[in-house]
Length: 238
Picture (cartoon, rainbow, N blue to C red):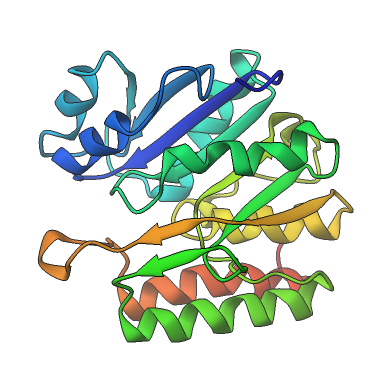
């Protein structure tokens, strides 16, 4: 186990048995605690987590993945965690790879560690063609906007020092960040503010389409992850 007190949080909305599979993949001792933030699921997601003895924080109404991550950050801060690991609740990420994310932070080389399917040693399978295109374009734009090489900025599997969020310049509680905007916002802001960034190779496995691999709508969802880069670069948002 890491010397840093580490919290892992799969965020979910109507993931059903998939959230149970995610939790079953956690080996004992890999992190100090695991909780689930449930964005007002209407299926059995909450019960799947509770059956495994995991704390579930459930939103009373659907607020968006950004709001769910914000809830995770608040829990981590309130409970004295040093590092927060966010991962998908739909079984696309591998908890066994969490130590890869933690190592640069433990070695005092990074404050934010991004998992990348595109680095040498990373893997992906089952990814739809349009996602292959979009997940290449976004990091190209993010690299140019921040001046730091990024290969997989849309990958939600990442680790962050909780102390980052004591910085008043990182304004998490803006309403426009409730959906998919929050993650690229955090990445952009922390890099631009001079915090240390690293990427490590990870695995990203997409389930068959009929099992549901995303809640993101192609046009609206991709604009959500792109607009923080645009608006922050132009100085239209803080």
